[in-house]
Amino acid sequence: MKSSCLKLKVQKRVSMKKGDLAWLPSATSLVQFTEEDNPDSGVKCFCNPKVPTHVLVLGEIEDVYYKIGYRGARWAVPKHYLYELQGDVQHAS
Image (cartoon, rainbow, N blue to C red; front, top):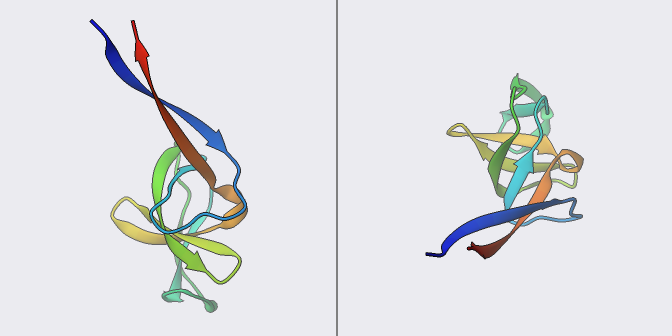
């Protein structure tokens, strides 16, 4: 009997778009701005995930941040901390 498994590769990418799945390393600083999508408004809240995780890219904020979904909220993360996930389905025997 063959079962399928998902094999994911992590790769740095110059530009991700809305809907991409990304890899967020642990201890990466996530921020929420006082005014949504406005870094100049100051930081309202921040968090540092203790474990690496997968996140969904929701868009871009200027040329510096990606907007992501993490634990039911929208957060901003500096672009250079996020990695693209690419998946291939392979069959194990």
